[in-house]
Length: 109
Image 1 (cartoon, rainbow, N blue to C red):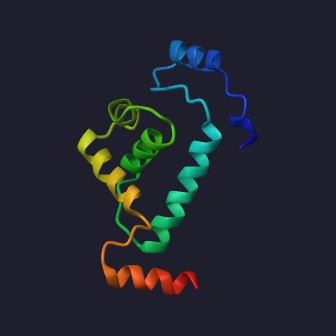
Image 2 (image 1 turned 180 degrees about the horizontal axis):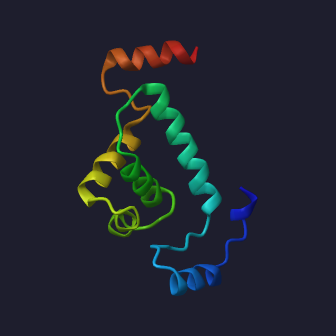
Image 3 (image 1 turned 60 degrees about the horizontal axis):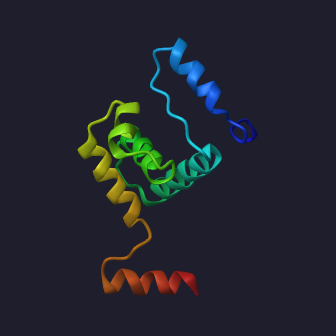
């Protein structure tokens, strides 16, 4: 994580200039990576099917403050797939039924 603390904009400019990779600068890369690990753990625990590239793009959109279009372009994924994964991520931990709410309350006690 320490490698991403002082990630300079100039480095991104150089990488864009000399490599064909799709690279964008993000203010707090450390936070994006922490969110990635958090989401991965939730997905594993819930046994939810996901599209890993679309999840990555959704995390960049949510935490990295990139637009969905830019994030989906970086991961070479269709925008609707990213939107679908973003909706899944945003609903993690939000119970939809009264029964699910009661279950979460029991677990928290």
